[in-house]
Length: 517
Ligand SMILES: O=CCCC(=O)O
Image 1 (cartoon, protein in one colour):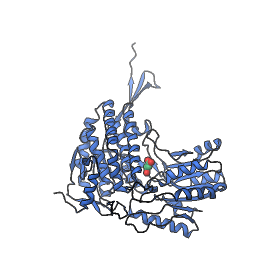
Image 2 (cartoon, helix red, strand yellow):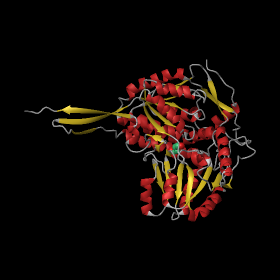
Image 3 (cartoon, helix red, strand yellow):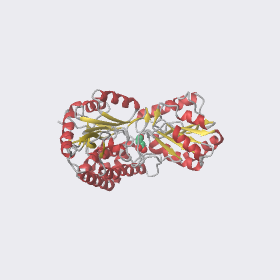
Image 4 (cartoon, helix red, strand yellow):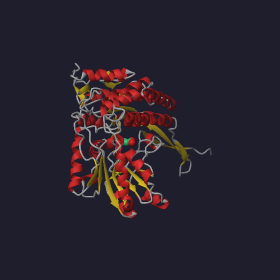
C-alpha cells in the first residue's frame, strides 16, 4: 500500500497550475512504461530544496512540497528485468528506427522546454533562464545522438595472415544503470540516455534525491516519443537508501554498464563495486579546474568568459573555475574588473526573472562554503567581495564571493568548492602557471587565456585536463568529447563515436577464405 506523506498542497497545486502540460509532473517511479510505487510503499519528501526568500509571490519556503517513492534494493530486480526484456527486443531495432525515436524525443523535450525548466527551478533554485539553457543543452544531445545512431559501423579489413579477412561487429552492451547528480538533472540524464539508446541499450536511471521530478518528466516523454516500454526506467530514492539501491544496481548480473556523474569519492566506490564483476564503468567526477590568464590575454574576453563560467548554477558545475591564476602584471586590474562585474549580480530565487545568481542546492554546501572562506581568511586571503550567507532568508543563499591572494595552504585550493566562490592566485611566468594548474589530482577541465600562439600550443600539450578552453570558457557541446583524466574519471560522454562506443561491445571475427585451387 503506497504511503502518503503530508506536503504543501498549495505549493504542489501552484506548481501544477503553472505548467502548460500538468501531466509532466509525476510522483511515482517509472518502470516498464508504468508509474509504480516502491515495493515497501515507502515514500520520501522532496523538501527543503526550494531555497526561497519568503515572499507572497513565491511559494518555496523550504517546506515539503512533493514526495516520491523511496525505492530500495528489493525494487531493483523488477526494474532490471523489465530493462532486460526491453533490451532483447530493442537491440533488434534498426539504427534508423532508434534515430527516429531520438528525434521524436528531441521534439517533445523542445515543446515542453518551459515546463521542464520550471520543474528544474523549483527543485534546484537555479534561475529560470539557466534552467531553460539546461534544456537547450540537453536537446543538443538528443539531436546529436539521433545522428550517431545512424552511423554505428563495424569494419572490414585484410588480416596480416594470408587467406584471412577480419570483420568487427558493434553490438549494444545491454542494460545500463545511470547514477546522476542534481546540478544539471536533465542535461546529465539526457546526455547519457541519448547515447545509450542510440547504441541500442536500455537504461535504469537513479536520479539524485533532490531532483527526481524533472527526471521523471523525461521518462514520460521518452515513451511518448515511441521508445518501447522498459527502454528508459527511473527508480527514485532518498539519500538514506541511495547507497543500497545504487550498489544493488551495480551488482546486478544483467546490468552490463554503469555510468556515474558525481564526486571522486563516490566514483571510486562505484569502480570498486563494479570491479567484482568487471562491469564496464564511465566516471565523470570532480573538477577543481584552473583558469589561467596571462599578461598578454584580452582581459575583457577573459572576464566575460569567467563571469559566465563561475556564476553558472552558482558555481555548482564540475567544470566551473575553481582556481583562477592571473599573471602578476594584470593581477590587480583583472581582480577589480571581476569585482565590478560581480557587484552587478542579482541574488535571488530562480523563479524571479530578476535573479542572475540562484541559491546553492543543498544546506550542506552552505556550511562547506563558510568554512572554506573562513579558512582562506585565517591563512591571509583578502575578501574582495561577499564572503557571507545572505541574511534574512530561509533559502540557501550565499553572496557571490571573491577571494584574492590565495595560496596552496588554503582549503579552497585543494577542495572543489562547488559554490559561488571565485579565488585569485598570482603567478610570475609560464612554467609556474603550468605547475600550479597541474598541481591537483583532478584533471577535468582547464581554461587558458593568452594571445601568444606558441604559448597556446605549448599549454595544450602541458595542461593535464580532459577538456581545455583556449580563450573561451564555453567548452561543452554534444559534438565535443566530455570527460576527464587523473582522478576526474574516465570514459567520454558526447563527441563523435567515442560516446556511443561506451555503450557498445566490439566483436572481431576472423574469416579464413579457402583458396580456389
Ligand atoms: O557538472 C558537470 C557538467 C557540467 C556541464 O556539462 O557543463
